[in-house]
Length: 241
Ligand code: ATP
Image (cartoon, rainbow, N blue to C red; front, side):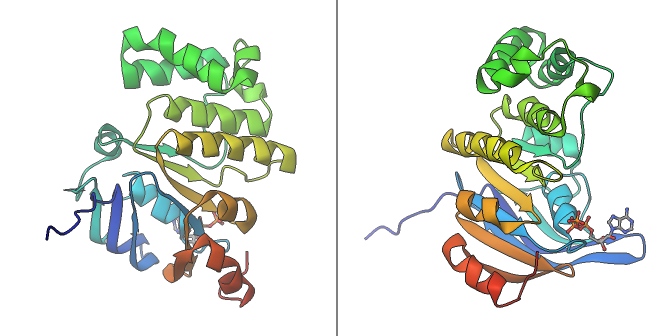
């Protein structure tokens, strides 16, 4: 009888620790994301969610533990190597070049990711997925609404068809109707086969999108399980967010 061989996780963090100078931000953090799986990372302010997201994207080196992408130990690698391995990071906040137009922002990212010849097809794909960005392609990115800027951040990374997309608090400060739109896009990214690490302070949207939830508190994983069970854990005050 042959044992079933499951594919390696897209991302595996094992016993990861992290510090900002003398401040210890993460303790013994372990979790995995399987191919095509969506994991929600929940926790209150300061729980360490962004630290985990930055480590998963190669932006913050862990002080201990391992980060493995598609079976390859990324120890000591930088963000560029993570990107080459198919990890894309859509950071929280307004991460666009404010004085460049929407189209210029996209073209810059696509030239870097896809080469000069990939810019045209990248742009048409981005405008197909985000028609609103197409309507506003000549507008300076700094004058877009918060939700539109979040869409621009997503468009910059998703055209690369990443193996893993890290979405860090994309709903932060957005009106509920815009959050719905951003989450619709995350749903379609997921349907296209990309794994997701969705960092959220508020649980509702992450619960409906994700298969499993990891809850952080004071830099530690305090709960992990299927999304369907997470509400109980949250209500039993393991996590208040
Ligand atoms: P939020 O939801 O408020 O963004 P978070 O869960 O993403 O919070 P992190 O940003 O990962 O939390 O921060 C974890 C801890 O590390 C916090 O206590 C924070 O104050 C601290 N921290 C973050 N960045 C730095 C830094 N550059 N220097 C010192 N401490 C930091």
